[in-house]
Length: 406
Image 1: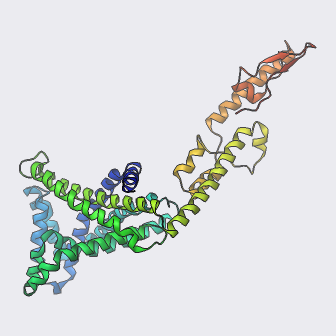
Image 2: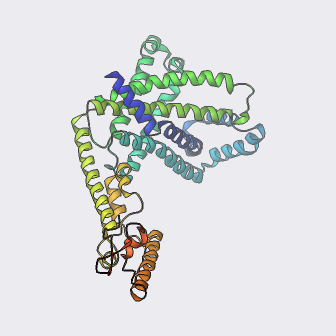
């Protein structure tokens, strides 16, 4: 059974391009960080009660962070004037535009997780695009709040908590890491739970969260070894070393989250819950109905020769090439939309009409001149072999093939 779960998990990761989707999520997360930080710094201009010392400390930290990306000249000419201007004036344009860009790109990264988890469970198409983006937006806001508290504690370790509450040293030493791990598992389990379009017991998503957390710790350790030997010190990356390191770490984290989702999906396929099994059966029925409609439309396209298809205005034009494959990759609603969408006459249809007209002219010439016979307009254009003319015993000519065009 363990081998079956491992095989299903690996197949899901390969089939749904988990590594590429993790890179996509890492990219959108990374580009959301600078405008988010700039917007937070800009909001300090409106908070007089926060204190000048705190603002000055944040300013120095922001300049130190920008120095890891920019050169000294870039910090002096770009970062320092911008940060000072934003802090002094409040920068409403920076706050509005920065937060808008950060929220869009960050929610886009969360949307990658939600879509991938939904597809892994075989429930794609059950939640609309608008609902998915709204869910991604609210989850991103929650992640910002949790990340603002949890990430500094996880990076700084227990020493940061001891500086805040020095009188509770034994409590911090005993419960620091268990609390951090528990909060991480709760957050990941909640992400997996709400990403599935149907409601199932919350505890069923805990195994994937545990796997994701273990993978994140192991991959972060390996990444640290890699960065220590490649990025630190003289490196070909130059000033881009810090952004590359951050991008790699975010990518590793996203990969661990998606692998945990694949584990949960594999467990659900082996031991399905009532809600997900019923939803998958309903989804399969919708797919089968959409497949039947596609096959029926393709058959009508093949049978609809000549003037009958043109005169029937209610008959929708059949889709493009290989319509039967749509049902394997698209949600049922999308398949129906493509199937019933009015389409113009394509180039292949025009070529068939022209070829058929040539066959009809040839048959007419045969009747007027040599008595060659009448070839079917459609069959004669595409089946030159079976559509030959045979002589009857009485000497008259007739077509030997009356089959319909495939």
